[in-house]
Length: 339
Ligand code: PLP
Ligand code: COI
Image 1: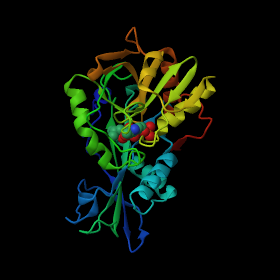
Image 2: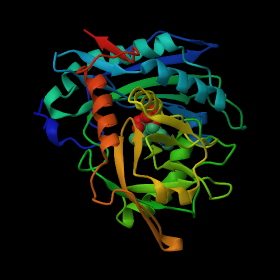
Image 3: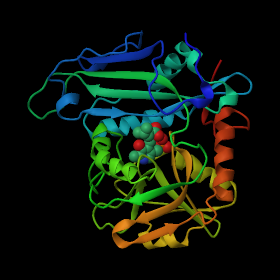
């Protein structure tokens, strides 16, 4: 194998040795199968190709200083995938099998887990697709669950550093009562134009307001938003954002640090009041926000006045990373250790 430059990995796909698959046929899930083939052979009328019966997840495995491999909150991803399945009428994949599949694929690709010192990790991408042929708009009768892995570096160049975001009003990622709370591919297809607009204009990512009124903060691209002021961690309550497992973990850690935690609608104007803000997610971890530009209204909400991550975001980032890499105790049992 060609030597991997662990410290300079980007957030991209790299071929690994194995993936794990499981087929749903005749109303039940089969056995987990270890597979070394990268491609899928599916029917051209599969519902995932026409009607978007597709769900995915994202989680990571980390190599600790002690050499052990840790997976962060796989049960939570399993539960979110089940919620997505209910959202687009796919059969739920059981939590125990999900965790088993994740462990199996990580173990089988152990040589692709970046070393502790590199700060990189192994991204785990489970997906569940409708494979049964259907031309009428109905759920498929057959499904395929796949989980593959790929070693990744930081989602945003520069790692833990502040970034600028831009409010995009022309396109919505998800409707107020649509699929925003589910991790379906369609939401990401809907985000591509906004994301390109933001990148072309030199921003790290697009910033969404709520689709109905364009008044409240929704999400920062493929990450949740949090703001900090007056010793309080504030994150949006909305019917169109993805329930982030990173955000849920940060809310707990913030509370443990003595911060108040609020989950409520956040009006755009409140951006002027935050002492710190960040985007959070598995890929993004915490990506501190430098400023958010509202180009249509010629406004720029500058959050990191000195361009640097704020002290609370930094503390939260280090605490979360320490638990994920096994440097500090895991009081909530978030981590699954693989020996
Ligand atoms: N919001 C969106 C739209 C995402 O795609 C993600 C990534 O999974 C998140 C938020 C963050 O969620 P999590 O922390 O569970 O990775
Ligand atoms: C994640 O954080 O896991 C994501 O899914 C973000 C993006 C790569 C879609």
